[in-house]
Amino acid sequence: DAGVTQSPTHLIKTRGQHVTLRCSPISGHKSVSWYQQVLGQGPQFIFQYYEKEERGRGNFPDRFSARQFPNYSSELNVNALLLGDSALYLCASSLLSGDSPLHFGNGTRLTVT
Amino acid sequence: QKEVEQNSGPLSVPEGAIASLNCTYSDRGSQSFFWYRQYSGKSPELIMFIYSNGDKEDGRFTAQLNKASQYVSLLIRDSQPSDSATYLCAVPLSGGYNKLIFGAGTRLAVHP
Image 1 (cartoon, each protein chain N blue to C red):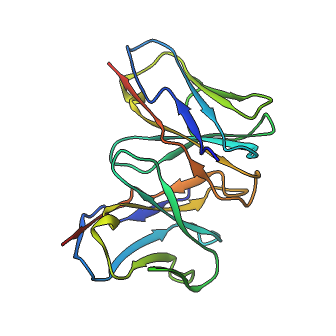
Image 2: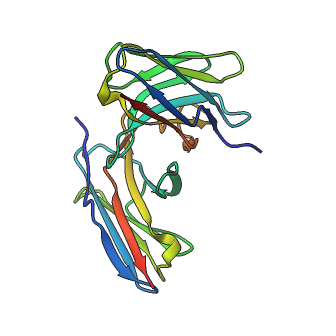
């Protein structure tokens, strides 16, 4: 079975632009979570979606938004990019919303110049 | 606000030795704890999960939880160069295991 897949793997954007990151969960997994990992830090929780509904939001500005589609794939959108948004964006899926461990994708490396 | 603290390292151990990685957490109500391994340039990989006081063993890995002292540790026996990675400790933010708070990670270097 394929793991969590994310696209693109790398992305370079300019300040003020908008970016869309995509994630396909493991087959059968209904929950998708997004994390931001800045170099030298642990991942920081951004959003969780389960059955197409937002189940949690971390301490990120409204420039960050996400959605989940009927096939359980997900998009993370970031508007008005700042230099500080440069990071590895990780998508993780799990079987359920509650007590199921997270399985991470390989991430999208976003560089904002 | 929940916090998870780890020594950033690097922790350097010789091949075959025991590596001991520690993590402290601020929320006394935390019930579950995760250890993830992250190789450079790769995504985190779950290696251990513990929710009861005491030890949990899985192969060369042992997780130790002490809720009274609010720390959780990871022991790696017979360390191998392939164990060289960053080890992340995480606790659930609330309501399930999808919203995790991670520590900054401890970088482990196992030298031959």
